[in-house]
Length: 181
Image (cartoon, rainbow, N blue to C red; front, side, top):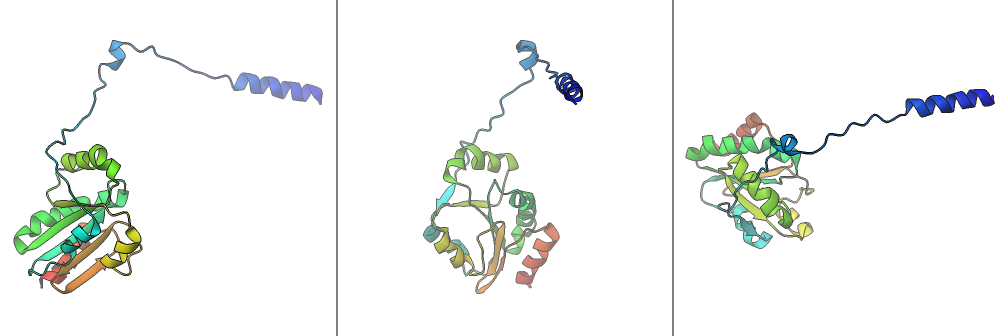
């Protein structure tokens, strides 16, 4: 029995030998590494608390508004943003306005949000909603909203519909067309 234990220990010691290989750092190894920075000086953010933002949910001017709540840290939000951008481009002449409402945290504005807006070349209006009292303003957007994102409000004058879901382009276009007819 002791012999078996000794053999197992020897096998474990020889089998677990770490194979590590290090490469010294020199100029040749680092020549392809570049810093990726984006000049965001020309990206100005409209930042509102809910009281200042709320006017964007109540315009009565015969225009159809598509208000999407999103954040750069929300993968489903980022995935659907191109559909909102496409809608903004294709429906601009049909009296439709897309408003992208960022719920990014204030410490992320300069390091994450502004570079994202610049790199993605967002053409839709981007507004930042900075109001930490979510329990107060979320039900004012829609009483059924749990607070999860992405979420979208589509409205025209007195008619409004709330969506707590992700969209593909065809679904989004179908919903918007209900407001245009």
